Image 1 (cartoon, rainbow, N blue to C red):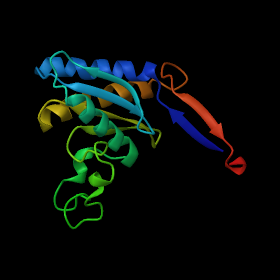
Image 2 (image 1 turned 45 degrees about the vertical axis):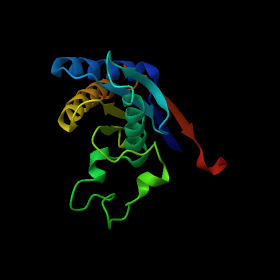
Image 3 (image 1 turned 60 degrees about the vertical axis):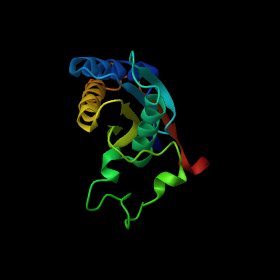
Image 4 (image 1 turned 90 degrees about the vertical axis):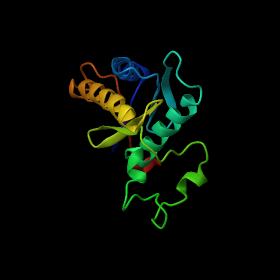
Length: 164
């Protein structure tokens, strides 16, 4: 059996709320995105007066973090960032134009060792995006640690791999 956890809208909304609260606290107009493990947007919040370009950027950051199971800024950190020239993933952002982000602001959502989604933050500088991302991840961790059966509303599916 293969156990698949899925994040839902009920999970995404408090994660967005935590990010919006942190953005307001630090005075940054941002766009926040939560996606599922396939990179599909579950919820998006463009704060008042946030840049219009932030929508696509936040979605790309969430997509990349979920799909590659790592924070997006790790792709470009010297000396071994995989997307840096000469490294194994150099040029990967050109394979999925507009969907693959290799700069700060995307973070995977991991529960029980499984990536269940990603968050993307756009509109601040790198440190601001990281601070808002940290608030979103802390909220996700609080939901997850409360227990899947108690307050977290992950949909749980079991698949028998023999029938695939």
